Amino acid sequence: MSNMQQYLTEQLQIALSPSYLKVFNESHNHSGPSRESHFKLIVVSDYFDDLKLIERHRFINQLFKEEMVYIHALSIHTYTSAEWQMKNGVPDSPKCVGSSTS
Image (cartoon, rainbow, N blue to C red; front, side, top):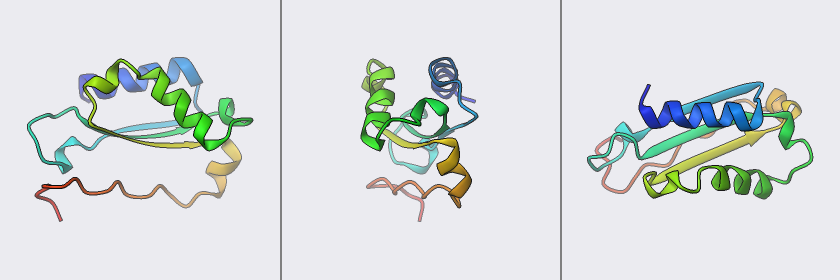
């Protein structure tokens, strides 16, 4: 686990007490030298029960406001427990321009 990946995981656990949390470092799928620049978050938390999707994303973006200077891409997937139970997975992250993977 990368330092940034671990940091993101710890901060989300503290802020949201999620019932499910997965932080993926997807930097290896993208062009460029940075190994800690592209992340995907899957967060299931009761905190989201009364929040619209945009409010959930704003919360996450505010939580990592300072870190976004170092992060090129952050894919955010937030769910309530009920939404997560109905979900059949999370969409793949888009390919980065210049990516060598297909």
